[in-house]
Every structure is written in C-alpha cells, then in structure tokens.
Length: 115
Length: 110
Image 1 (cartoon, each protein chain N blue to C red):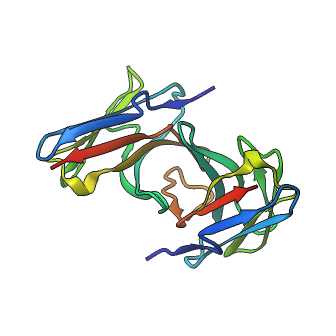
Image 2: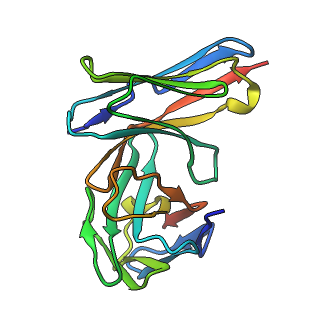
C-alpha cells in the first residue's frame, strides 16, 4: 500500500511566522504535489515536483515555496503566514512523470490555522 | 477560469436509491477523469477512473459515464449506503497534473 504521511494533523501559528509542512511518501513515486482545500473551491494546486530539486508552480503559488531535496520528501513553506492561509493542506504523490494516467495518492492532510 | 465544475454543492439521497453526481469540463485535452471520495479530516481516496476514449467504466456499485460531446461525466452509486456519505471530487488529468472540481457533499439517509 502506498503511504503518504504528513508531519502534523493540526497546526496553529501566528501571523508572520515561518511555517514548514512536511510530506513523505514511501513508494518511490516521482511526482509530488501540494494542494489546499477550501469550502466551495475544491482542491487547488499550490506547487508540484517531478523530480528531486525540481519544482513547478501550480495555480496558487503566491505566499508559498517548496523544497524537494530527497525523492521521498516534499516540503511546503509559508514564508510569512497570513490569516488567509488558514486552510486544509493536502500532499499527494503519483508514480510516473511521463504517464497519461495520474492517480494521485493523498496524505491525511494538515489543518493549519493562522491567528 | 474553472476547467472542471461540479455545480451541485450537496446531494441528499435515501439509502438503497441511486446517487448521481455530475461534473462538467471545458478542456478537450483531458485524457483521464477520476473520482475521489473524501471523509472529514482525511485525505481524498481514489474511487474510480475513466479514459477519455471510453464512455463507461464500472466497479461494483460505482459506475462512471463520460459524454465527450457534452463534456460531461457522472458518477452513479447503486445502491447508496450511509457509509457513502462524503464529499466527492471529480478530477481531470492533463500534463501529469490533476485539476479538481469544487466537490459535491453526498448525504445518504437511512
């Protein structure tokens, strides 16, 4: 079974703090993704990575950065947290960079609250 | 610009009846469509998919229909069970990424 784990289930931070969200997958997947889920907006892609040290912007990258130093680990960084970044953050991975079929496997999510 | 749309935020169905969840898309280049199910405080889990060259795929109680001319897909759940109560997302695959709809919250009443 593919396992995607996220470092925290719930996180409370203050405005202006630097926040790190960690994601690890154990199935040697090439692709990793960060989404946020907000009511009525579905899942929106923040950043994704096709390989180690590679990253691509998604639909809403502003205010975020990412790091992928190892294949199994993909980190999302909020440089200076703001209240509008309060959300559910979901990490996902998928197998092949060149595949047309891209079933993604998700972690349990991190509920981040910025006060 | 929402390329994948789920226009019904919620749906309520009686146990044992059929649930039909709908999804519309705008991009003809999508090559696969997937449905995910999400319970509160959990990540989405994959349910069923369909290739853009097919018009139907079935897996147990779940069937997905694709109408390419209308750019519309639907998920049928028969019979619906209380454990099916969750948020359902449709997603379209292109260029290694998935684009998700807004989700439909299904409530199956005993």
